[in-house]
Image: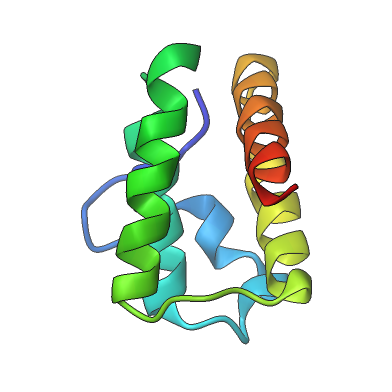
Length: 102
């Protein structure tokens, strides 16, 4: 499993968050995504859509938005540390999010 929760102790950031390409993205946004990735990892396909809908509401309430450039950098950083199974799950999430936008 990818190192989503951090390396050795809770004060360390997960490896994907330490990527130089993410340097300009606020920690609040990265923490929000960390929570999303960690909490969604155990969800079934059926549970995923309600989770994503609730997450979208939370992000709007907290005024957390991402530019296309931020999303691209974040996705690439997470993929770098993901297992094949996690990559499949992430692709499912991205498909669901794209379908929702249509």
